Image 1 (cartoon, rainbow, N blue to C red):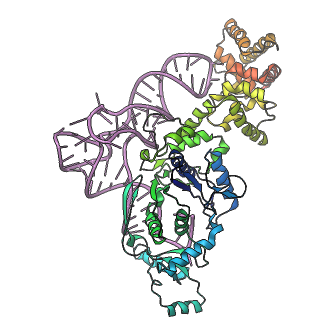
Image 2 (image 1 turned 120 degrees about the vertical axis):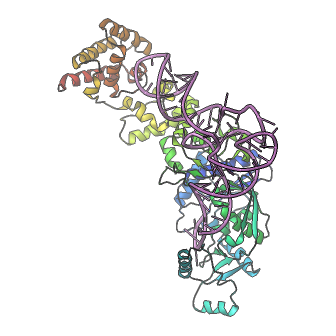
Image 3 (image 1 turned 30 degrees about the vertical axis):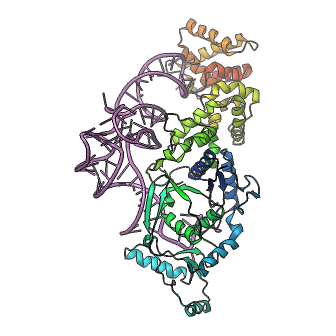
Length: 499
RNA sequence: GCCCCCAUCGUCUAGAGGCCUAGGACGCCACCCUUUCAAGGUGGAGAUCAGGGGUUCGAAUCCCCUUGGGGGCACCA
């Protein structure tokens, strides 16, 4: 194992986001490719917004993708593993306080007694004056007496980190050298709230230092936070890790991807029947490429091939149509047994929603696969594709039952003839190869277009105009039910109002 | 407002000075296959490489400026 240590550090303030999955993926792949360690850490210091349910969603979602982590919370249930725990930040609050107090003792940080209201007023004033928001430094040089006075007022101080005046630079693995003037950082920033809970910029650095993270791979939105982090690493006396800032995933209008304009929760994509393979494959290609023309890549392929040098700098617009295409590619690559297993939950959901009346057996499903596999854009499309096979009855629209070239009487006559032809094939020889020739002969004998007859039968037995190939469909439906549905359609047509 | 980042077909991208009259994929169109729908195959439209200056014998590739877009500036993460 190399000394590469990377981490994904989501905050459980919402469900696992598709952008988070990609960040995790890039970290995971970097670790695997370089024989390093992938750490998962939960950043739950925003107590007001963090929930256990979201944490669970993140853990199970991540595990669903096939990614594994070497250290961090267990994917299911409670507990964690790894030598650098705790991996949930709320479990090490005392530690952050100690570190902050140490910084105060060293003069690198100081208590600030400004109230949120005072700070808010200051920001407002700066905004109207068109000045950049910035902390004034009012509490930076308080005398012991002044501090004591504030304490007597009952004020509880937050702890601020001294930013100083200097330039801070780093060599981004993706973007190259970046330099900031610390004076543009907004002044001294708070690392500990007045209630002594720590803030993001602080915990992220303390933890990355504690966990000996060597490469921080994260979204581009953190580029301008990086100088604060570097300052903190240095104040802690810790080696500064390497940074790599990934391009953002964008909405169609090129703003940062949001749930306003896109589906962003991984769980929604799972629920619609996107495969883990497709999600991983699609996401890794948003901002990275092999440098070749290959584009269907498994997680295993990627673990061998991923690297940071082919990462794009500009943001990438999320394109659901392309995701669906990748998904189709992967569905077509799954083994029959695997596909049956994966389809099961979606069929159960169809039944639960009352869209089908019964569940197919494994045998039925396997028999259907050849015809299903190349037609499913998502696993969730199963109901739409062949749900008509598993309902008690279909109600074909009489208007649709009559092909354009025909009138109602022709349709009735044709369906009756088709019914008799199918009945004549008999239950024993009821197979696609046995059904097609006699029905074709029928169309020739009567001078009908095969397409018209087939369409009338299709609509009669499925209620729809677009279905898998007709004869496979009839076989899947079964002899009895095919005849029943034909009879019913004929009745309906005969009884329908003349349009 | 200030700081930072970015810029090749509608979209994802290949491209690291001559291989580019810019390649692939998604989407779109047409044709083939075909009982419908898909899948698959073939072909097509689609980018004066944001614009302008340099550097160079030669620039999508290097430099500068402009424009455009994005991100960040909390006692959120």
